[in-house]
Length: 518
Ligand code: G6P
Image 1: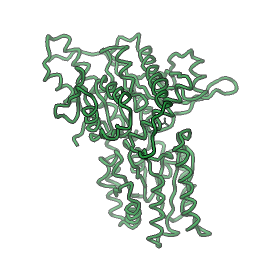
Image 2: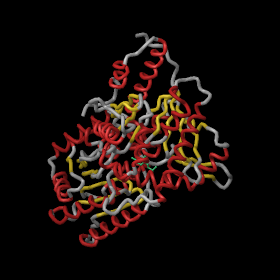
Image 3: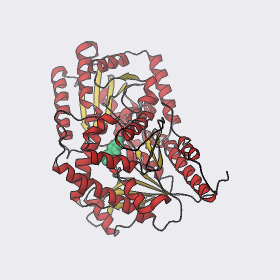
Image 4: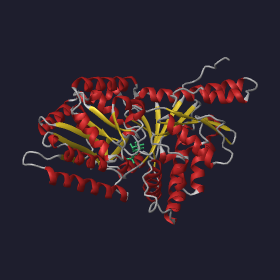
C-alpha cells in the first residue's frame, strides 16, 4: 500500500490547567509563572520541543486579565501558542469544584465513603448541565477556532477527566478531519465504581469518549477497565473479545496504554542547579546523620498521607531502635482546598503529625517535620538525599514522584511503593511494595528498608534509575502522536483506494503502538 506524503500535523493540547499562570503587576505588565502539577510539567517539556497549540482554562484573575488584554486571541508565550478559555466563574465552579473535583476524581480513585457520600443533588445536576458541559463545549469551540485556518492534518489531545465531553462537541464541530485522542492521567476503575454516576451522566461521558479515535491510559489495566465499563453500560458497545478496543455506533475506538514518564534531562538539570544545591545543604544540616524517610505529595486523600504517618508511628512503636535515628520529612503541596474533603484531610494530617511529635519528641529530635508549600527545587533536593521514599497512594494514575525520586537520589535510597500506583507496573520489582491500606505492613517495609544491606540497596537503586532513564517522557508523547499519524495516513490512503474491509479497519486499531501487554 502506498503511503501518501503527509504535511506536518497541527498538534493541539487541551488541558484545564495551562502551562503558565499570569499575574498583572502594578504597571499593568504581566508576570508569568509556570503552572504547577505533574500533567503540566510533563506536557510543558514537550511543548518546548514541538510546535503546539495549547488551549487551557483561565484559572484566576491574572489569567483572565491576560486573556482579555489579548482580546481572547492565541498568543505565543515562551514558544507555546497559548489560547485561554474564559468560563463564567459560576460555570467554572460547577465544572471544577463540583464535577471534576471531587465527583469524578473521587470515583476514579475510589475515595467515596459510599454509605454517606456522594449525594447527587440538584446542585450536582446543575453543575453538570451548566458547569461541566458548558465549559467542555467552550473548550471544543476554542480548539475549533484555533485550527480554523489550518489546512494541515489536525491532532487534538484533550487531557484528563476535566475534558471528557470535548470529543463529543469537537466531533460535532470538526467532523472526521480531526484525530481526537484523549489521554486520561488518572486511574480508570472497573464498571462497579461508575455506578455512582447517574445513568445519563455516565452514558454521556462514555459515549463522548467513544467519539474519539483512540483513548490513552497510564496502564493496560486502566485501558481494559475502560473497555469493560463501556461494554457494561452502553447498549450496542462491543469489544469482540479484545482488551484494547471497542466498537460503538460504527466507530472502532482503541483503548491503549501509554505510561507517562518524566523529562529526564530537565529533572537532572534542576537537580544540579545552585538553588537546589543550597536547599539540599540546608536539608542535610537539618537531618544530620539520621536516616531520612521522605514523602512528596499534594495534600490529597488519594495519596494516603494519613496512613503513611500512622505507619511511621507504628514503626517507632515496634522498633524503638529507630527512635532518634530516623527523620520523617513530608513536603506537602496544598491543593484544591475549596473542596471540603481536602480541607478536612489537611487537618487530620496535621493532628496525626502533632500526636507523633508529642509522643516521641526529645530535646534534640522532632520525629516528623511537615513542610507545606510548592517548591519544586526543594522537593528535588530532598529526593537526592532520602534513605526511604514513601509513595503509598490508595490509587494513582502513575505517580511521577516515584520516578523523579529514583532518578535523582544519590544515597541508594529505597523506594516504598503502593501496589495501586501506575508506577508499580514499571518499578514494582525493585521497590518494596506495600498495600496502601496495610499500616502494619508499611511500617514493616519501612524497617526492612532502613536495615537493608548496602549491596542490595545499591542494586535496587541502580536498576530503578536505569528503568526511568530509558523511559523518558518524549517516548510517551511520540507513541501517541505516531499512532495518530498512522491513522491519518491510513485515512488518506483509504480515500485514494477504492474499498477497505472491516478486518483491515480493526487491524488499524489493533496495531497501534505503545500498548504493553498486561
Ligand atoms: C494531578 C493529577 C493530574 C490532574 C492534576 C489536576 O497532577 O495527576 O491527573 O490533571 O492533578 O490538578 P489541578 O491542581 O489542576 O486540579
